[in-house]
Length: 249
Image (cartoon, rainbow, N blue to C red; front, top):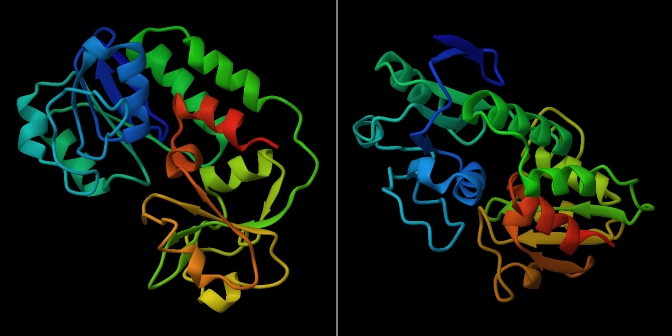
């Protein structure tokens, strides 16, 4: 029995590469469905990519059906420190289910974490999209594109703050996150502090809040807005390649 350690340093025993995996992380679900679909035996209702994914659902990321997870007899459950509750991870482990927890705050950290997960848990070398993503995001940063804010909710308004994957992705694309400081990673900010003259752009993603052409842009009078796929800003997986192609200057 081999003892391996996840991103948080917590141990789990794996006798062999995992062949039955339940994913509680939508972006990692997409990666598994792309590279080893036969090993993916369960996912959350928020695991929406690929669109034709056909596996048992175990409810949401914040309220997984732990009985349903256990019934799938996974070799390992994949979770994330930010997306999933520590309580659910603890209960699964107490029930004897191995759980691999990822901890992602940067683009480079996401690539390192995924490559280590593939090698340690799946027994795989980096696949084509992982190699492509490493090459894309290893390119020199473009010239500064200005200051940007990324709301993730409204009423109350909340924005992407410091120490986040999204913030680092924006940095590598040449943007300066106007809220890249402070203690709160997703601070509440009054609208009039976002809609201000010294910002060059507000990006409005479609998740977790679903900003649309009719819901979001109308609130801003001073700063231009742009609707963008939330998947491109927040999903570390195959979406990283698409994000670089579509969001680069």
